[in-house]
Length: 253
Image 1 (tube, rainbow, N blue to C red):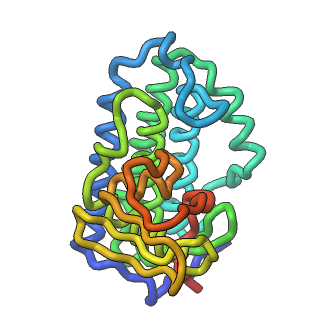
Image 2: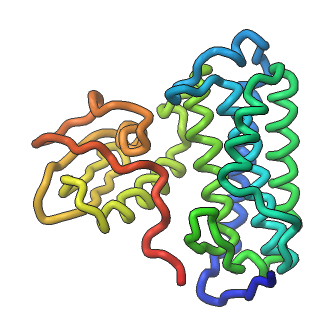
Image 3: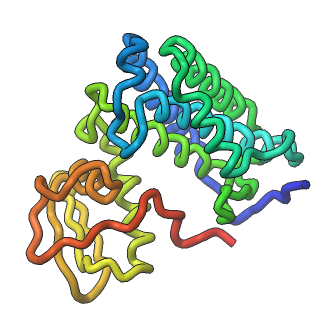
């Protein structure tokens, strides 16, 4: 399979550099949290129903493998071997979750490092190459970095090791709200307006429905299913947010 380049999905070089640096930062913070992980704590429950911390760490490692596969495809124009499908990823999760803490941490460090190394090798003209998520929707290669950062930041919280939505970088929160609310405008969700008081931002979703107000961190945590609405204010009943993360909107052709 070869991948055509696209001239409709460019990202400014300065923005690309900042985004890549942000992913490095997310990976470094995760690594710092995992430095003290013990075997006993690796087997404790995570915040995701039915998952232990070993599941979350294994999922992060295999996700980084997927993103590296996409970046290699964008760089070379050729699939770098078979692509792991849903059943293969689920099997890897089951088989890897019970490993010792040292093995789990080594795995996620190596896989994340390999993904970042692949990103560093990608020529500037290949970042606009279109690739496909496993669910089928397409995006330029640079959006892979957004996906990787979202994965690292969200699942860092899921580990329940002291990192919370309040620790999310402000620029990540702003991007997460922009991306999530944009997609929600295409769905009937019972929300009319979202207001992030600390960011000075307002999003209009629909002519009718509830207005929800709060800090950007609290709003994104709620929309991402990582917190309830107790820290938010609303003038009406709040809906259950749709499953997250949502695909980008508008979609790329």
